[in-house]
Length: 304
Image 1 (cartoon, rainbow, N blue to C red):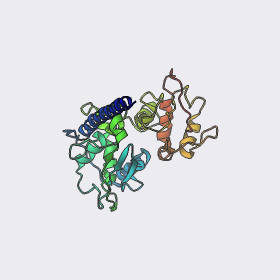
Image 2 (cartoon, one colour; image 1 turned 120 degrees about the vertical axis):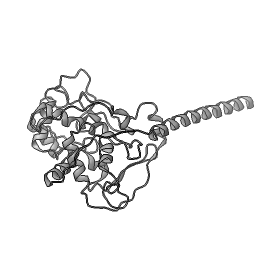
Image 3 (cartoon, one colour; image 1 turned 45 degrees about the horizontal axis):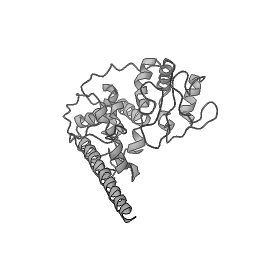
Image 4 (cartoon, rainbow, N blue to C red; image 1 turned 135 degrees about the horizontal axis):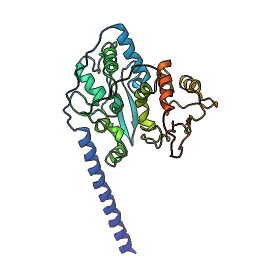
């Protein structure tokens, strides 16, 4: 009996040792990804100074999810704080204490928003630049014009600290959103930005912001965020089947679907996307109506 216990103890210690060694390897790979140096020469984007451009920039910031992470006044905040996943901080974008407004050049803003790269050359964490990469030059310039004129807010923030689960998921390819800069072909030319109109082309341009959850084909599927429910299909035979444009706009503006269900803003940020204007929401709907029917099973309900 003693020999059995002895061998069992040795086996347990060996297993723990192997798991710890594997974790160290995974952790090293995660650190290597976070500390990778990118040499990005961002495009020259002339920044406007007129009030209309600044107002346009504010509208884009308010309606594309920027405030969800950076705060209503772009003062920055800790938006993930979990032992397993870690602590992830959205930067204070103002000129107050702890902010970057005074130290960022125009090129630094472009590098961060469009490429997901800090001015130091390191990738930004959980910065969805894989979506913002496709912002047209004019829209990007308006966003930067707005950010450069934010009132200063003193808000020093703690450093990022990636947790053990994230350090395992990332090397396994299960947490691409940790370093979105790796998802971007930084040399590829962006398509020409379509004119703002109620057209499928403009809707497709706007729908890039939806791809993080609903996938590029809008068929939905398992969430890239651990703990989140699957995203619904937005194709013609998906969760929006039978809806009208008015139904869609109502849901985005009120958070209630045509059949009386309430959208959970934590998973479907209707409070952000509902700030899109009628042209933008109409264009989104026009684009969604052009999508082919999905052959994938619907995995969720839009009211999750």
